[in-house]
Image (cartoon, rainbow, N blue to C red; front, side):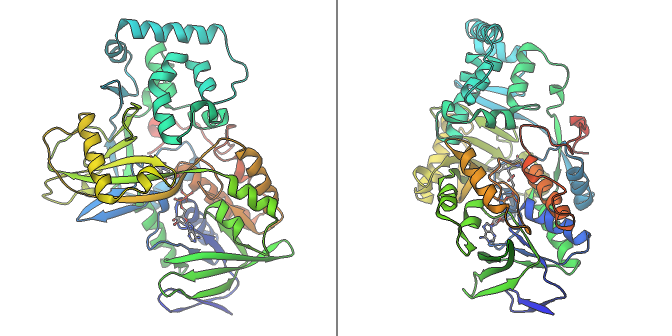
Length: 491
Ligand SMILES: Cc1cc2nc3c(=O)[nH]c(=O)nc-3n(C[C@H](O)[C@H](O)[C@H](O)COP(=O)(O)OP(=O)(O)OC[C@H]3O[C@@H](n4cnc5c(N)ncnc54)[C@H](O)[C@@H]3O)c2cc1C
């Protein structure tokens, strides 16, 4: 009989060495939930005091707030099944309204052809059509970067108006330095580009569903993950919060134990494992291997780049500020990148008789700029930005607070492919270690991709090698991706 000690001090007895799942975000929880259903003992280790990772919800004075907009959409049947199984009736239908701010104007997204042409004017519209025609007449057979990929499909002018500013704000590097693979991975199918093309050049009806409505957890995106955590506990599985993974010991091509640190007491301890599924940052995982990975592997890990997010939450004295769920601020003259209005999601996220509107303003950076600014200065900056783009007029900002999220966006630039393949090759030697998730596998995942990776990793524990996790959210469609009509894809 093996036992480990939880944060509360209680001894947890386990019949056989459990599978350790590192990180309780969407990928980790989907994995643990699936493993538990398969009848395996699981221990989930989460550094924070709450589950859900980047998709958690936080509570502030009766408001339920997400980390920016967390619309759920999927074409993946196993993920949809999981979503419905876990949430059941705890879902609401949200009317979708999103717009893009560019050139002092708000354009509907998905774009409406006549509205866009009218707002852009005859000259600009002609330039768009001409540059689109040029791109079609002289196709670029091998786009080398994001700028070439987008321009090749939609023309230079559309790229400049609707994509360049937002993309460069998000990634902090010129579009010519961003991998074309990123565009191929994230922008195929239903996308801003598809919407633009649909609006301006017609579409086959696919984009129309892009979507006017979506299903959403009644109590915020984190409700899905809280319910998974509850199910795990009810099934007798262990979920260790406030516990950080600080080491993985291995021998003979297998990880045999994890070293954990109780963040409350500072105590470190070791626990044996039968297998490990990790969704903690890939770079951290590699650095924590004991014995240490070769210098070339550590250097590859260190070379991977990422982008941080600073979220500034503002509470504005108003009931009906603006109707959007979220807005993209494409204009390069404003640092603000995206704004979410939680008053337009699920009514249950707002306190009864509340008198103000909760907003979330997103800024992207390295460990500089907004990351190092004081909270009060950030709140003031967000308020000024909102006034500048006319989302706020006379309304008073009552209060605000800041959340800093490190490593939210893996950057597909420079030598990342080479570095990633070095890391993959090194990790492949461990027969019982899998990596999943957004930063766990250095993939620009949405929730559904991370959920699918978690589900498939769990199945791989029982039948090793059954699923290639790296194929999820790659530019080739994964074989489990089903063509669910967009309108029915979220029930
Ligand atoms: C601003 C923003 C908006 C987004 N909008 C959407 C959207 O609209 N739709 C959508 O589907 N997705 C959206 N996403 C993406 C979504 O949040 C992610 O795809 C998802 O959370 C990834 O899940 P994950 O489990 O892979 O990683 P994470 O959510 O990052 O989970 C990893 C977990 O590991 C834990 N961890 C890290 N290190 C350690 C350690 N050493 N020991 C123990 N635990 C550790 C972390 O605390 C975290 O809980 C958005 C993300 C952001 C940042």
